[in-house]
Image (cartoon, rainbow, N blue to C red; front, side, top):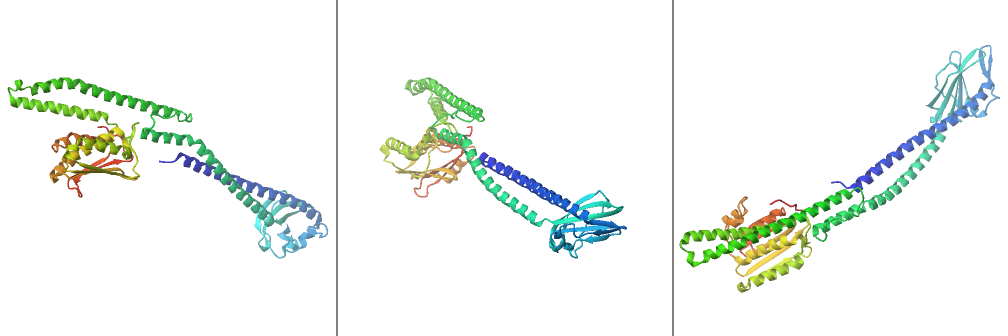
Length: 449
């Protein structure tokens, strides 16, 4: 899973960095070319002076030192020229000293520009041109050290790069603020989703960007359909159960009538089947009330509601004088659907009270990675190893495994499966009776029963 905000910032930073580097590269090339063109223009001006100093007499080339700049007489001055004529005869400026300047011999009218290494490790630009004067061909190369110029260019580009980097950082900060502000509406949607999971609201707000409005509207539509179908399912099962209860009550009264007890065995078997129908009806009615995680509903708050459930069971088992205690860790959050958790805890505690001797304890705590843990223990006789194995066997219904642990624990198993949770049965180490452990994952998904 990726973050849209991080992806936007990364791509923005990459695109701006590439753009700045490309601009700096083109800028450096343009400024360097401009500097070279300026040097060439200056060298062309000097060539005019040198050409005016060249004298051709009887096929020999002479240069008058009085007609061009004396900077070409200063050793290693950074300004040099070489005149090549005849059979590679050369006339060099005194500034070159004994350093051989490399350049090609070219025909009259041609010109070349080269960057070579000069005396004293200077980086020089050589402008070469071919001439013909008084029927004599010669090549004139004039050069200038451009190291200082390119150092200034490098320094300027470096300063521009530093300013561009600072500008890039500032721009990214501003763009980050803009991106976060633009995506703040998505954060609101995430908060509303959490509120829907907690049951404090039933739909998303439509005050969202136009780009995600269709998604929000479709989510609200699906939430509405789910609520309607859940309500219709509950109503249909409830109506069916209430419609059957009347005729079943008449049948029960008929079997309880002593005058009809002609065949006691058959009547006893028929009575058991009627009782079985009652249990199945109660089971399906309870299953119809189950919601599961991920559906808009009110969350179960163990800190506020477990005490009421415990108090109700203590009234039910007041004649048994059961000591029913509980503990809830302070950082345990609200979890599950309120009615589902009432059904789960009610059945676990009711079963524990029924089979306990005098003590029942319930503990609830939450862990960030695993989820909500529910532990219910009693001091009853517990179950044997074979009975515990049968309870945990896949495909074995709990109401068929152990007499007296039937319908309640079957509902518990349905709820745990609905929340993609885990349930285990063992003997209580501290109390000696049955210990039931239930895990409700933090991000459990709804499972079809």
